Image 1: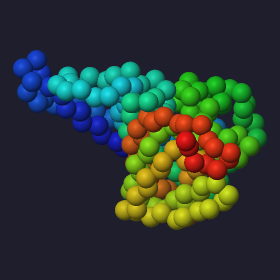
Image 2: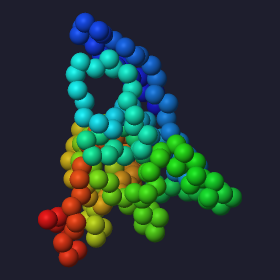
Image 3: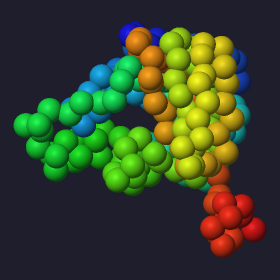
Image 4: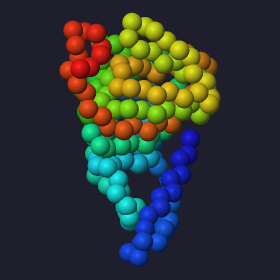
Length: 186
């Protein structure tokens, strides 16, 4: 899959300009065979305008409070099958290098499940994917379906026969303490 990113900005007089037009390279890993993540854009602070359109700091894979991330993800069908010869430590280090902080949100004892401190707006572009939340509750999503993911524990599972493409915008949020395991913040 090819992703082309076009970025606008303002010149010194405040006029709109096209400032970038180019390909976004996929992030892949032997730890997640068949998956591809495209980090289209991100910033760690609220946007203010005028803005020259240059990339801002956005090192961590998921956004901090007031930050945002724009991502496109390709999810292959079936469960990922990792090579038995894979050097797990090296593969996890590679993921950390390419997607800083992403593995900290993942539950290694429950593959695919993760929780982020973000409000995510997700649209399924092609294929189908199953969104799983706590206690195994699931819903199947198809092209054109959208999800508003409110900082919940979840996983994306492709039980179909073709790759699925989802597009998401993650907006950093605060997480309050959870009350007595109820899942509802104060």
